[in-house]
Figure (cartoon, rainbow, N blue to C red):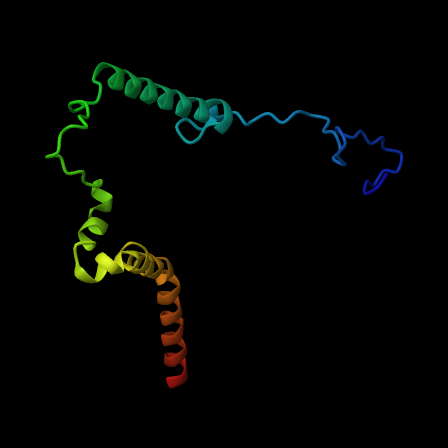
Length: 144
């Protein structure tokens, strides 16, 4: 049929595909002749990795159950001396709002404008550096 050399060959399709059925099953090679060199990925290596992952997960769960996270005292809405602070990864934005050009009437500029420009510059830095290096290569090639 289609691409076979023998026109009398019977073609057996697997499911709805156009892949011919193999006459023999694919058996992974025997690695006993090569001790310590390699092993079959699916039954041997992957099973070992999953078992190590399960042991690590169970160990972590046991640790979190036996030693719960230390919590502070419950929140009291009547306390006026408590000043809420942002987490450590937002502290630079909190400190930035103390400057006069980023607070008061300019609070939108301090909360959205300047951090947006800074993070946009960080996002575009790889492209800018690549463009600069490509431009310097072009200039060096023109000087030759």
